[in-house]
Amino acid sequence: MSAYDKVFKPRRITLPSGKSILEKRSRMPLILLGVLALTALSVRITGFSFGPLLSRGNQFFVILRQMYPPNMKYLSSIWVPLFDTIKMSLLGSAVGSLLAVPFAVIAASNMIKSRLVLTLTRLFLSVVRTLPTLVTALIATYIFGLGTLAGTLSIAIFTFAYIGKQLYEQIETVDMGAFEAMEAMGGTRFSSFWVAVAPQVLPAYLSTCLFCLEGNVRYAAILGYVGAGGLGMILNEKIGWRDYPSVGMILIVLFATVVVIEALSHYIRSKLT
Amino acid sequence: MNPIIKKQLDAQPKRWFYQLGIALIFVCLMAWSSSTVQLDARAGSGLSIAGNIIRGIFHPDAELLFNFTRSGVAYLLLETVCIAYLGTIVGAVLAIPLSFISASNIVPRPVALIGRTLIMAIRTIPPFVYGLMFIRVTGPGPFAGLLTMSMSSIGMVSKMYIEYIEDLDIRILESLDACGCSTFEKIRCGIIPQLIPDFISTIIYRFDMNLRDATVLGLVGAGGIGAPLIFAMSSYRWSEVGAILTGLIVLILVIEFFSTKVRVKLARG
Image (cartoon, rainbow over all chains, first blue to last red; front, side):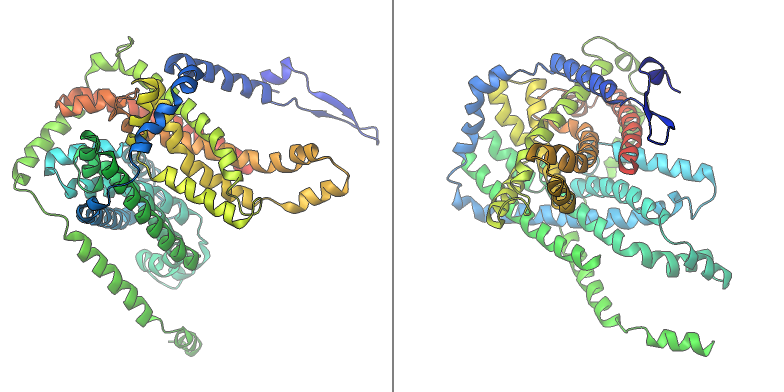
């Protein structure tokens, strides 16, 4: 019996058979209290208030209104950065997801028995995943210079950590019967993995990769802000000059690209599963 | 080889043509996209720069890290958590009506399509553009960051909500109807218990992501740990970057540990 149950005594219910059971009191008040306290603290620290939202809320739409009508003439100079963005996210996703495979195998508890190796690999994946994409992109621009290589690299690093985690969880849930049968037949660990485990995780793996690619196109557009190439670079430039009609055009093109890529990946993913 | 096994192997459908096609498409895509990557002439000096950066990051500025005033890492992290927390809540609340008008089992198809397009449009605008818009409303500071965070959460959160709403088990509502329940009772006992665990799980997941994306806010000066981090990086003060990153990574790992526990509990009941 926990301390909470001692303070709020469980309710006693007598069944028609004469037997009595105890119903624990709901933990809801405790959780609610915590949520409210955190909210109050956050409101204090961030200075949240409805006053400015109500009185100055229309200011939010000023920039949006200036984006319309979009500058159609600018369209011709968007294509190159747009394709740079798509290429960055394609290459970054592919490199990251391929690199993640060996790490995911080492991090799966049904493939590797050593606890030390498991913990170290998982910690490595977790720490890489916490690195903000912007920070890796900015560091990459210092090392490799401004341009798409920096963006590709930071997308690859992010994808690597994300896919690595998803893949090792998928490997851990496979049916091990086939793997054991292959080992009993005299297969090596690698060939058994290749024949018995890989086909089981392949559809889920490919689908995660495509899902990641969808998100990466959006991320790639942000990365340009730190000079890592692609759409973000011209977006940053146009915002700096307050050329909002061109910004509107860039956003429309980005929207269309994201819609097309999501539709494609949605179609392929529905075929995979 | 055992003749039975051989027969089974031969019976396997021949799909090499199909697989070869996919491999070819993949290779072409990769070749096309690698055309964008060119190594700079600076690559040689890059190594020494990388060495400096790594040395700085692994020697974090202890003074900044254990400084508990308003400019220390601890306060900045607290501010970031608060922005992410309230931003996620505001975004999650805003996403509820949006996702109900975009769920195809609640409203007619054309309306749902319009709702989905709207959500996708909200998702496409990069966070720093929202940041600029909100700074006009509230002025620079954590409040603008909070609003930006809530706008950029709406997209993913409502996408997940829609999936849960479309998966609602209608039979429960029918049986409540048969028992003679009123509309309010049907919502209270039929819909809310089905949706709440999934919704809360989504919100917690998004909170994790928002904490990670908090650096983006720094780009536009919208509060939190992002701006000091970006400033320190652009002025090459790597030991400060190290201190901030250490704090951020530890915080994210700790919060992720607890949020995974809560989400597992929510999923298994």
